[in-house]
Amino acid sequence: MGRYIVSRLVRWIPSVFILLLLVYALVYFGAGDPIKLIFLQAPGDVAYDPARVEAIREAAGLNRPFLVQFWDYVVNVAQGNFGNSLVSGRSVNSMIAAAVPVTLKIGLSAIVIVSLVGIVLGVIAALNQNKWLDNLIVGFALVIWGIPVFVAGPLIIVFMVLVLNLNVPYGWAGLFDTKVIVPLLVLGLNPMALIIRQARAGVLEVLSEDYVRTARAKGIPNYQVVMRHIMRPVLTPVVSQIGLLVIATLNNSILIEKVFGLPGLGRMTETAIKSSDYPVILAIVLIFSIVVMASNLLVDISYPLLDPRAAAKKTEDE
Image 1: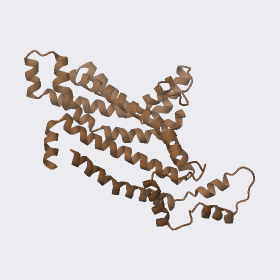
Image 2 (image 1 turned 30 degrees about the horizontal axis):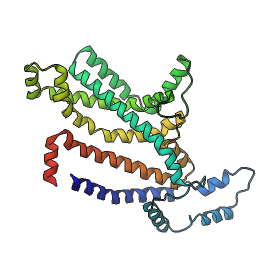
Image 3 (image 1 turned 180 degrees about the horizontal axis):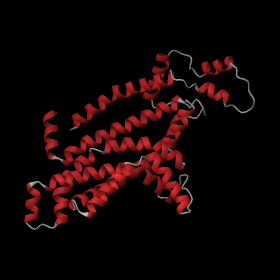
C-alpha cells in the first residue's frame, strides 16, 4: 500500500506540471490583458496611453518570452510563492490563506451531510423496495437530480423572500451561523440524488446475497443485518462517487459563494477571471487540482479497507 501511495504521488508531478502549462498558456495567449484593465479602470478621466501600458507591463515582467515567464513561475511555486496579484498587488499566498478555510468548511460540510443523508435515504428506499416510501425517496432523488445549482439557488432565494418573507442569507459569520444553512442546502441537493441512487442500488444487490439471507434466517434483527452485513459492501460504490462530489462542490462553489457573499475560493475565482488576474487564477487551479487528486487518492486507499478482495488484488499488484 505504501508503494502504491508513493507511486501515485510521483505521478502527480508531471500531471500538475502539464496542467499548469496549459492554464498558463490559455491565460498568456488569451484575450484578457490585466494591465490594460487596470489602466482603463483607474479612477478619474485618464487618457489611454499605450506607452504607459507597455511600461507597466515591462515593470511587471510580462513582456518576456512565454517559456521564460512560465519557468520562473514554476520555480516560485516550487518554493511556495504564488507571486502577487496583478490587480490589487497583494500577495496571492495571503489571499489564498484567507479564502481556503471558507471553501473547505463549506465544501467538506456539504460532502459529509450529503453522504450521510444520501446513504440513509438510499438504504431506507432499498429496504422498502416498490413500496410508497421507496417511490417517494426515488421520486425526490429524480426531482433534485434534474435541478441544477444555478437554478436551485435563485429559486430558494425567491421562495424565502416572496413566500416566507425572510431576508436572503448573505455574508460569512462562521460555519455554525444560520446563514450557512441555505448555501449548504443549495450545494448539496443535486449531488445527494447520486448518493441515494448508488446506495439504493448497492443495498438491492447485497440483499440477494446468500450470507444476507442466511443471517435473516437465523433470526438476527434487521438493523443488525443492515449494519453488519449490508453497510460495508454498500459503502464501496458510494465512496467511489466522493471524487465526483468533490469536483461538483468545487465547480458549484463559484456560483454559491457569489450569490451568498461567501469570501471563498469560488468568489475569488470569479473575480480573478473577470480581471484576467492570472497569478490568482493559476494558484486556484493548482489548489483545485491537488484537492481533486487527493480525494481520488483517498478513494483508492479506502477500497481495500472496505473490500478485502480489493486489498488482496492491490497486494498482488504491488
